[in-house]
Amino acid sequence: MSKNVLIVDDSLYMRTVIKDALEANGFTVIGQASNGEEAIDLAFELQPDFITLDNILPDMIGTDILKVYKEEGLTSKVIMISAVGQESVVNEGISLGAIDYLVKPFTNDQLIGAMAKP
Image 1 (cartoon, rainbow, N blue to C red):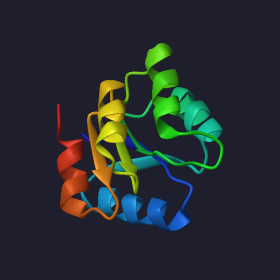
Image 2 (cartoon, rainbow, N blue to C red; image 1 turned 60 degrees about the vertical axis):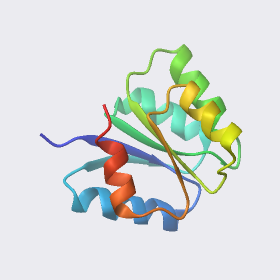
Image 3 (cartoon, rainbow, N blue to C red; image 1 turned 120 degrees about the horizontal axis):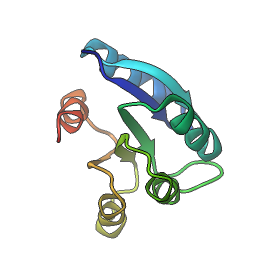
């Protein structure tokens, strides 16, 4: 069974890299968002199995988006993907419910491995 994914990143290039890696491994990308407002609207509209979430977006910080997901009871599994890799930021993302936190640049294997986490 294919798993549905929402990709959130302000960079079209990064969204394309993530989309290509996921689709090559049997995932279905059902939506893409380039800012926090879209990320929240699409997550609740599409109810994806997974969300890849950049931490630095033009209008919001990814951890703030995670707080909204958590408060509103979204059941999607979230994998944070960001160039920001400070331990405190990574720990905050995990504590807010992300199942993994990948630091850019990452490999396709790291991404697919993160998607396999329970």
